[in-house]
Length: 283
Image 1 (tube, rainbow, N blue to C red):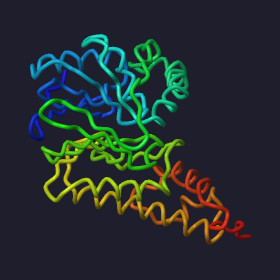
Image 2: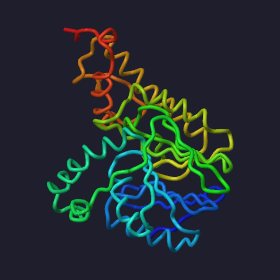
Image 3: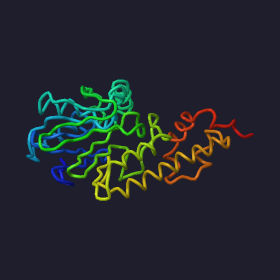
Image 4: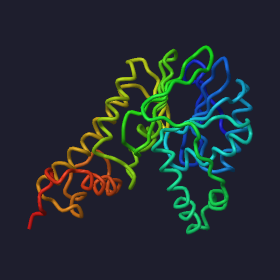
């Protein structure tokens, strides 16, 4: 159980201990929009109970900020509890979830002692059925909610949710507060800073920004994190341009976060750089 706290007008966030993940509810005249659904059928059952306990209205839609299972595997449970509501996501996120879900389940098959293993493996994965490529507006009656695709970053299909009348933005895992941003084998470290430039353009000095994990932040926090991710990208570019081999680059670089977190970022960055920006390894 987690309590939903109102962080902006009719925008409530619940922070769940498993993955320290946020689930957000946006209220409007027509009902509630649930943004992200947690990591399994069982975990989403808690979300359903907490949304009902909030007592703010009926759920009329779901949004997935990106494909990762800690944000999407609860889709079926939430939809099952509140009716056949639409599930919105970027088109890339749907493709990634469709291809990645079984890999996630296999990870937990291989870790049977994990307390969440049985629940994750047994979860029926429900794909979003409402997709877009650039932007979409959702009508909640007395307020409009904007879904915006700023570009590749944490994954290829991250969206942000903007609520203009509340000056609030839900950033998904393009922004993290409780730990440094997570770079995985599906991240785009060379694109991520530019995508955050788009995100910053959707905010004001007074904006409330809800990250995928951790406490709400402000625009200054997002700008600082954008610059740190930019340092990662430019360090990768510099190392590759000087011919440092990829398997030596993590140790050779100076990073804004502990180097053990950046192996995937470096490997992905080297892959994404055009050949013209890489030299042969130094002897």
